[in-house]
Image (cartoon, rainbow, N blue to C red; front, side, top):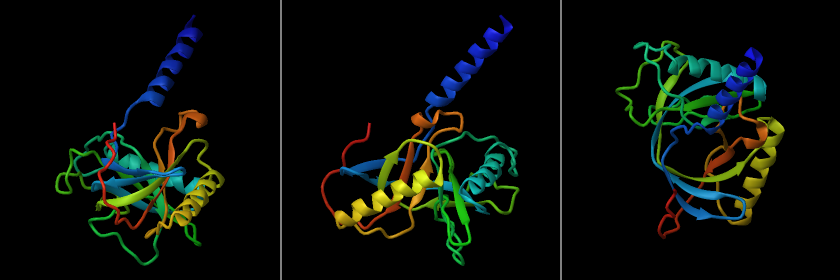
Amino acid sequence: MKTCRILVGIGILSFATITMAYEEPLYELLERADEYEVRQYAPYLVAEVDVEGEFGEAGNKAFRLLAAYIFGENQDGEKMSMTAPVESRPTKEGVRMSMTTPVTSTATATEKYTYAFVMERKYTLDTLPQPRNPRIRLGEAAARVMAVRRYSGRWTEENYRKNEIELMQALSDDDRRPIDSPILARYNSPFTPWFMRRNEVMVEIEWEDGGDAIPVK
């Protein structure tokens, strides 16, 4: 009976983890194409950190550092809520983020990535708790138009690269010009089954089209 109760408890916890609705950045849907969406994002705050290592290893390092910050390793000892997505992009060597840039992660030839947690909308740069770890930076992602391709599956480099290539090819076919490095956005906890995960490849693009935005429900 005790074993049964434990299994039921694990099942309830797992279901809650999978279905929990995290706060996300605000955006308007501008266009739906066959292979991607075009979204206009409002500015949002981030906490970011640079890490080195292979694709999966770097993500584990970055998550530990950023999770420690939001769970109390800050000057106020404040525990903040988890949001979505966790972003990652290639680190731009020699380019330091200003106080108005996003938190994300990606890879370079030296396998250096920048990972970012999106901060809750209730904060401003003035009210965000300051991190104790000097490696963590706070900033604001500017308003921008992003082409976004959604996919499910495991958090492997192979899965990500496949979808990144398909997004970039679709943009080329549609004469859309990317103006920054692609970003990997992950929306679920590691406990979510791989086939239920929401992953996205995002890249900022030039956008001069007019017309009304499509409401996002």
